Image (tube, rainbow, N blue to C red; front, side):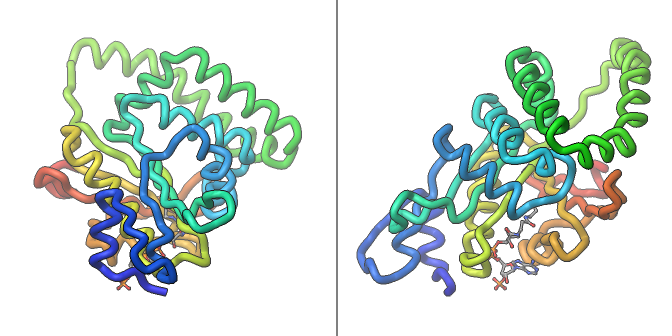
Length: 254
Ligand SMILES: CC(C)(COP(=O)(O)OP(=O)(O)OC[C@H]1O[C@@H](n2cnc3c(N)ncnc32)[C@H](O)[C@@H]1OP(=O)(O)O)[C@@H](O)C(=O)NCCC(=O)NCCS
């Protein structure tokens, strides 16, 4: 099932025109993600994007993590809903930030958010001993190294005052398998780019696995520029894709 380009354009502006109810596209609503969507987005993330540490901590942890995007002034969240389903069902979602550095600084300062994430993470590890072992094996040493380096970096930052360009990050994008290849992924990515486009970000980045669970072909089809692939602590390989918002590219800014 393919959604015609004209309908995609309508949806981009959040217009739902149920003129021909039998057509699948008329069932779809594009709208900002809300708190009530978090149980569905977190379940979808764990199920459809099982890459990296956070999804392996389970939907409860991911729900709290997703919440930080909705509460941050730098966060962006959009969902596509199947309005014809008995209870509005999420067909796909995108979450990310318009200014990733701003978002991480804000979350790091929010003691409630950090405590909530830490508690959920700890609980998840207690009931998932295998994941806990993986964390100790793959994350503990790099984290410790980073903490000890932080003091040096802070001192350097104070003296050098480097101004880094603002970067938007599309952290998670997923579409339910039964709706794939019908234009929903492209629609969500386009809406995300539109929303962060006026924020002052120089470019948008997204990371995807180069393995069978990844979406390198999708980003290439969308014309995003491919960066280097790199290994992850979990033994996967990820590639970063970038879309320039103000003429920035790998060569001029990387
Ligand atoms: C990647 C994903 C979001 C794409 O969603 P989708 O709704 O199927 O994408 P669209 O239908 O809008 O596809 C847009 C174009 O990309 C192509 N495309 C989509 N997925 C592709 C893939 N994995 N490889 C190659 N091309 C792909 C489509 O064929 C279409 O091209 P066309 O216009 O020439 O026909 C979806 O496959 C998904 O949820 N994957 C699992 C999660 C994931 O990997 N997310 C990305 C990393 S954050």
